[in-house]
Length: 316
Length: 307
Image (cartoon, rainbow over all chains, first blue to last red; front, top):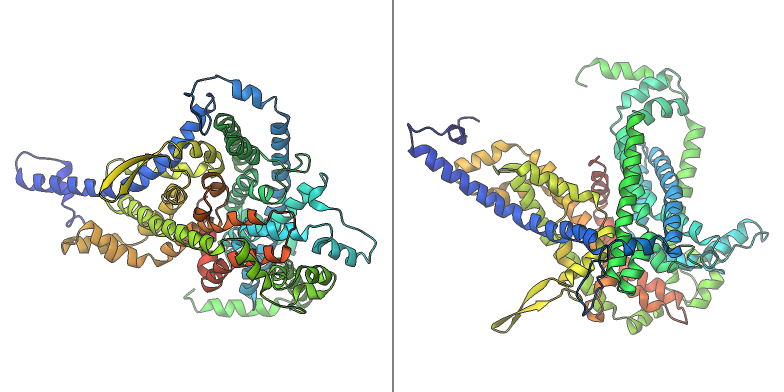
């Protein structure tokens, strides 16, 4: 391979043989230029639509910018943040978001692991079940939200089911119009939609565990729980950290379900940080205030991810 | 595995293992019950889209809720076509998704090719910077991005003259261009390209092939699985996009399908029509999913590699 790499000569440019290095140099420069040309579109687009808006979030949050305004933008210092931390709707949204994440992360992560173990066999029909559990994942969250909005009606499918299963003893609540049940209802639906996604991620982790380990364990007469505790669980270390981080970020970003099903109601019981940001930034066109909310949201994501990273690392 | 003793050793192990009959049955029952939990709501959506509203509600208490019985018709679908410009929405979504997927495949694979194959100073830094963008959730950027795209210029071609216009709001391009470059796609292509032996392109270089030829004739044809994965991971969010278009698109003729659900927030809620609409916008994705199941599942599994 060294033979067909003329570039070796170029790393030590010598005066004695001037013509081949120059030719090589020209070839190398051409290669670099071509490479630059190939990388440029992706880099420019990422700069334009990720780096610039990220930087803008930091700048706009300290201004009075509005989406459409004839007035020039002026710096207002911490005004937006002071206003933000005195805003009861923002506090409520922050609490709701944390509540949603605190329930969804363990429930969805655990349920997904259970499903993954259930379908991690080579028996007949397993791939059929995997496909079925995965079906809600490919269904859009907007569609799922509309469907469950219908099922959660006072006289809808879910309450009818509760009525039948309890032989008429229990009458279900008006799920989405009751501040006590609106968030749990959204949680249940979100787990139903998203659990198949993380099942697949757990599965790819499970399949990296050598089957010999399980075989050895079952030969030694180890119980199923012990096998899980001492073979499966340690083998999933990397997958675990990943599942944790992806569910958390997904949960903290809760927006679509709320926007389609409850619009933050009733009584702000389902308002979330992202929903609040969209309401102020888009509906009320207060870009600067929304940027401040976005910054707080980003800080939240980073803090939670850092804490999780720290915890999963320490136990290793 | 090539040793002949392996099967002999495994034989007694299998014989020793007791036939796990009861647990097997419990497992199968659990699998079937769970399958019903996941599939019945979707079946309910399809079936309800074919029934008049009164019958949907009267069927709720029985198994008929999940069966196409009674007055089955496409009346709800006809109602959807009357109420919502669904053909326009579908065409918009198809066009936006297709453009995002095709341009995304091109831009991201080219960048990954250069970073994986070619000599370029600082390419490690470039790759790291690209991957670093993954930590920022789109929801954080969305609002500053709305303000930003409203400031961006665009060259408009009017016949033979060019005009500089201001602001990207309410266009197709604002729904496509921000989502073309994707760090995760670059990363996936890069991983895949690195696994293709370098001897292949070195031989091609000896034969006088240019870099674009190597990209087009050697590397891309060998990268089917990576292309499928990136295509699916780009297509799904493009088709499902909702947060972004509700903020940047006002005109009805530019809207994608997911925004169309807003047409049903009216006083007289027509559930049958809503189910017909959601069925219509789900079917294209479901057909693709059933046709390319393995690729879909593999592409999601690939998101588990990044840790």
